[in-house]
Length: 78
Image (cartoon, one colour):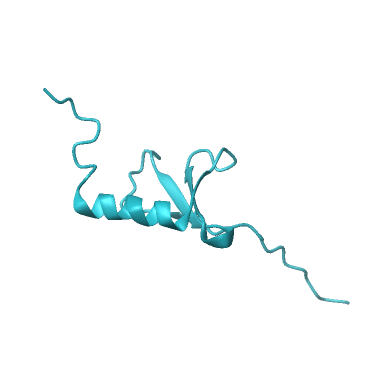
């Protein structure tokens, strides 16, 4: 067809990076995957591995974050 253009549409998942991400690129991105799973990947390695969580695992993680269960994570405990 004359004058028409075909657009390439990515069939992959839409990835979201936090608006609180730092400019140094130390960020993760999340995406809704098939069957309700949630994917998490390194924003600097978009072709790299994806951690895949079930909806239940993701809700449990977010619940722990909201409750402050990870507030001391990585800190030295005496």
